[in-house]
Length: 168
Image (cartoon, rainbow, N blue to C red):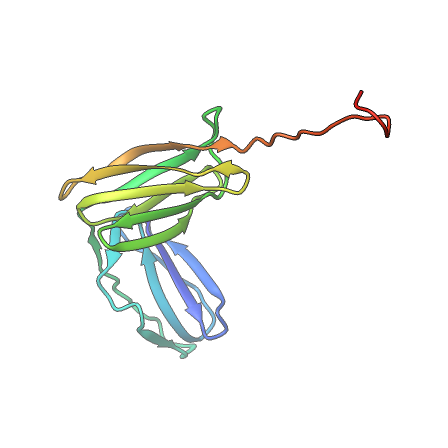
């Protein structure tokens, strides 16, 4: 279940999934493509900047993509006050000195490979008060049950009622 993506010179993407044996078949128009593979907890061993020439209409190609398992990753969810996932929250993750900003999915779920050490996670969404957590990630381990609740912003409106002369 690895997603293999072919992106052509016009920036059109074609996605395919691998089977249980890691095999995939891609039927794409002839041309030049940047190829990438994506699976949670893995990273590509191949250079991301390689452009492949698939311009021959009669040849078939055999492409081998190598992924390397990452030693650690985090997965969590940004929730509202009722415990429901907030769609597409912004998540900032500080791992060592590096800060990565990602967007969660429609259920508020986020996932990211990380290095071992202290990880700070901040969830944000317009209309909510931001919140976060700090976790220690051990080498060759992962945390998959992170929940960050956000509270809706509530506004207070004050004023005075008058009859144009005195307060009522």
